[in-house]
Image 1 (tube, helix red, strand yellow):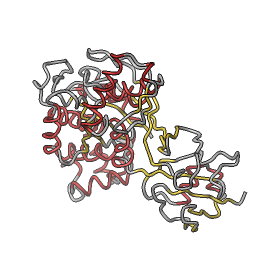
Image 2: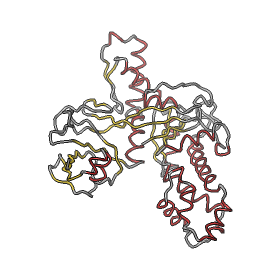
Image 3: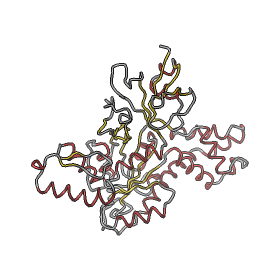
Image 4: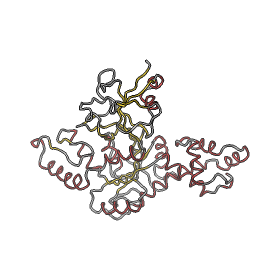
Length: 399
């Protein structure tokens, strides 16, 4: 799973990426500071089942604090873009190509209205952030449309003359962005093009197909960044009403980054996603640092119930991509073969069956699957039964 962090220049996109991953990235207040995509590991937060079993887990990947499990997810921060990216403006072509590998997108916007349509800093509140919500989806739709229309006249004649299966040919045309035959069939059904000859499809028909497929293959959540800037909350409330079909989360990437850096340097104990922190040793914090931390506590954490960054990550994985967290173990003692307690937590799509999960753990485990047991209920799990969030599954094999 790869999550893309996207948006215009100067909206705090790279700050959000660094706050999510603590990766070293260049952060500056000018367009196209991100030229090559940055990669890093972020973490989604789940309530660890170690608490249910009264044990301390030992994650192989990620970490666990006070029975809150942080499971790694790969993130990619691509070059900022401007309107007209699909026409090659700005870093448009590179930006769009870098997005091919992303399963979902976090669209970071400056909800304070302090960044104009070109990604240039302007007076706070002077720009309408609603325009940003609209423009990225439109750019991506046009990107898909360009791919779909490549050699379209020849492709349409071929389908018509050879009586080829429409969804098969078009799925191949868009395979690079994750479109398969089943998804293309859904698009054609949704837009009601089954009874219309391909050569008679209009540009509007093609755009509707492109938009449908983009929303399915590149689902998007909006991170309304800079929520702590005066006037931003009013903008946020307005765009939530205006775009009721979108997932929009208020956040302050700068606040999250500051808190994580303070935690990293042992100044505070901060669990990402919490609405508070604990100063570890006041004698090691100067007056300026103390005032800064108090400002974050009062004006961000308490006011908005957290910085919102962790909420964005969690909603991207669990609400947007509809995944669940499942723990595989080798025996009923909750350990792997080396004795590590609850070492793994897998993020899998909702509806994943026991046998499918076995294959995700390891091909050999799937090939030699005998049965599965839910260690929470002590009951066997049918081979094809869908697993549930926070299940702890013991998989028995023939070898």
